[in-house]
Amino acid sequence: MNLETLNKLALERNDQTILGLFDTDTDRAQGFSISTGNLLFDYSKTQIDADIRNALIRLCDEAGLADRRTAMFDGAKINETEGRSVLHTALRNLDGGPVEVDGLDVMPDVLDTLHRMRVFAEEVRGGAVIGAGGSFTDVVNIGIGGSDLGPVMATHALAPYHDGPRLHYVSNVDGAHIADTLRQLDPTRTLVIVASKTFTTIETMTNARTARAWMADGGGDPAKQFAAVSSALDKTQAFGIPSEHVFGFADWVGGRYSVWGPVGLPVMIAVGSNAFDAFLRGGQAMDVHFQAADWVENMPVLLALVGIWHRQVLGHSSRAVLPYDQRLLRLPAYFQQLEMESNGKSVAMDGSPLTGPSGPVVWGEPGTNGQHAFYQLIHQGTDVIPCEFMVAAEGHEPELVHHHRLLLANCFAQSEALMRGRGLDEARQLMADKGLQGEELERQARHRVFPGNRPSSTLIYPMLTPFVLGQIIALYEHRVFVEGVLLGINSFDQWGVELGKELATSLGPVVDGEISADGKDGSTAALVAYALRHRD
Ligand code: F6P
Image (cartoon, rainbow, N blue to C red):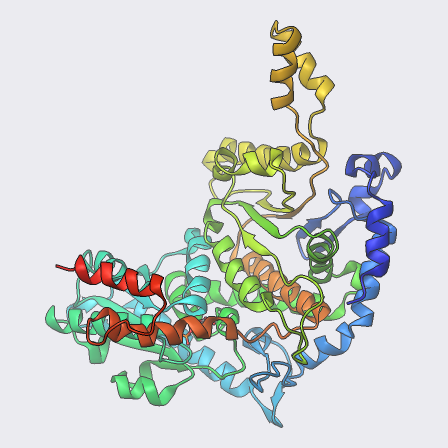
């Protein structure tokens, strides 16, 4: 990525404030925002002006973004280190034409599995499929990473539509997670879904075996009360899950992109197949927009370019995702995997080292909670943290409309405060109004200065419906894709998680006390020794 022009522009614009941009361009809010469907993405509270945007857009052409986008949607093997296509978009291609991988149309299989999911979900919801003790009151999804974060996020997000059995998620291998979950449940009326693309992930398989033993010991029937979601159908069979309860998907669905298919089964059981369809249609609508819109009108592209401007040009190493939407409380964690597992790479597709920074650290919490915690640093800390606000124009609680107005006011106030800041003179005046004078006035005033000129963007949507959630998730997926193309990396592998897994496997018998820690570094050996000493 050649950033020469952008670096030059950044230097030239060093003294240009965001507020100043609004003074010189009264239509800035319209000129630097994009709508698609009912979503509005406003990036006018950044330092991006027309020249910067043009230079950013040129990066798309230089990187061959249009061809890469076509390659992805057409099923080319763009995940080159694993030799795989990247086709999560096929999972929501409800009205689309054929999608070929190796000359074969994958859509019949996709639609057949979707149909089986719908039938199964409605049978569970309606009590046609039951456990040893009767209809299912609870569903436990056992999975981790992409087999957990997407459904957890969507289940919280779609709470107003949740009219199926209660849902629980177990991911951590820490026995506390499964113990605390199962303790409250009836083993004869609980459905367990084991979600694992590979069906080898140690956390998931350990939890699945524990759940199976709990169910069998408690009078449940694992042969009837387990379902599986996986690409490894031989392994689900070996585990003893009947084939009619197994929902497969192909290796061209990456884990962190998998919520649209069988991994979304628990969500479908919770909210019903119609609401799940609406979620898919929202994703599909964003796919259509992403493929059709010019770069300057293209929401995922502009969201990506704002990210590139902040991270690769200005060097801001982290990005806060701040949904003013309590039901999006797991969205930051979901985006963490989506963005950091995809674009946290230091080599380009051809194996050469990246010459600039990889993707940023992504983190966040719902507002307004964050305001009473880490916003202090965002406003007055020494690092600039670009913020991505999200909020619905309307909540789901008409009787609590006054809450929602406060929520909106807080969201809008934060981006305004970040941009506007408060100068020393104003802070001095505030202290003078309080009766302070002299050195004490000066000292106190300095603590109340806000540097301002801190960038943010806002995504606003009418209401958090299944359709809107689908739009938002697909928007961010494509954003990550665009950033990856511009960086020249493979956004679809995740080799960086492997070394820790290998070492954990080799440390298993050491922690069990079966073999010694000889050969390990001093710190690791000492930690093992401590754990062994304090056991029992
Ligand atoms: O360890 C990382 C990872 O492979 C993720 O990419 C994936 O989402 C997660 O583990 C779970 O993998 P699986 O679905 O195969 O259990």
